[in-house]
Image (cartoon, rainbow over all chains, first blue to last red; front, side, top):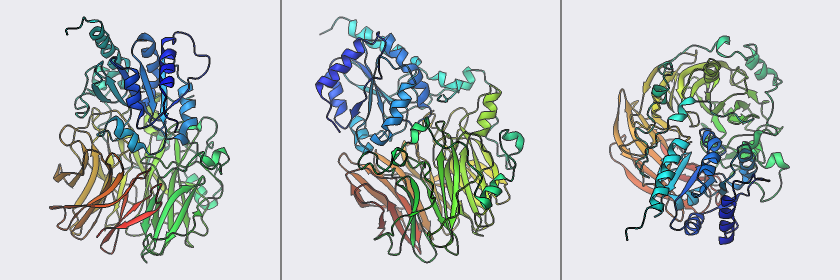
Length: 172
Length: 459
């Protein structure tokens, strides 16, 4: 239930920047609650990011976990935020499953409590909890929802487009 | 290590982006087409008992009977180390207050004398409680099995309870095994109101450590017990041949002796969805109608119906809903089915097809759905349905930004016109609601963190 501090978010970003270095230990799992998305958005203001939800109960999510780390390391400038939509009682399972994939470069979060409707609503009121579920936030933080595994075929071209937008001279 | 879904068609995700509400129509363009995969058998209704060739690792065919009568047939490796998915308090020493909360998935049923019964998971065991006052108060929990074993009670998985004509209690649950997404369907019965229970048995003969999960339980009109479940044995066979196999399969077993033994491993259909509850509805002729989320080619997760006979024949397979939800995901959001006094089938389900995404009601008939109706608001979820004579009731939950509301809609003209009502709300975690019917009245059973084992009568 700990509130997410700015410091934690910045630490996550630093970890992301350093992600080329092998992770000595499993990345810490931050607590994702109804206020976390707002904190993540403000930590990445003006920048695109990927917000990906999975669960220990979701079989189709495994294919995504297997490939997400490589995507993150190919695109260190676009944060990939991976959230386990599982209550605290499943935390050991979350840790174990995450540990079985190479997710260096991916920020790891898990639901802070078991009132999951409230957490989900803060992300997207229309999301009924189907997984895997991914939101692609562009630099203006307009989210695009995607149900089904977020595989490189989806993420790589989207990230490439975001980087082009970021590098394009401002028209203002 | 972990079994990864070895399904080549995951690779198809198109790079096309989809708006946050218009999910997926046409996104999952058939991987199988791109992959030039051999066509899977089209939604076959086998209707024949699975043979040894269909389950190479299955032990002798009478093992289920042996387990039922002797209670000594050891199930396959109990959950250990890797069974991380289903950790709960009992496996970490229990009693660590606040460290791990029990899963909330629960079921309830009335007996013929008006007592309500519920099954849940408490302290690592399946438990049953009785209420003689329509859910105002409940007995202390009565453990169904002595030795703790892991039990799935999250999302669409939960212990089930059904009551026989003479008050016999039947309970099923899914016991997860060591590998993720594997499990055995377990059964126990009590003839003394839950005080003592038969040793749990495994309902299916196939004992591979694969998916046998999402048990569903009902008692047929002649007292036979039907148990259906999601089964991946056929997917395993396809995998061994390097063939694609969409989803899982729907299997069932039948007991004609009050749950002492089960005959079965009868296949209803190939290509069910992997993680949605199965609706079972007993019919006057002793058969049971099943409604489940199916995988229609190429990857359309609409629903299918079939008729399960006590002798293992499953016929009448047909598509029941036509939403065209193309998705490869894990909705944990299965359908519910009821029949009115004229034999008309009423169903509720969830889909994110292009036309009416969300929780949906409709009357099922051959090749079409009548009276289609969107249930509740944009966050409505987990609808359940019951019917009696010309009365039909639907209950669901819906988060409004502050609280989770328990809502219902009722029709007194067999589903033509409806009126909505608010029943309760909670500001903490809650289970899916379940609708019960007794003597023409409807009750919603709702297990919430704030108010466990709530039973709300519909006005």
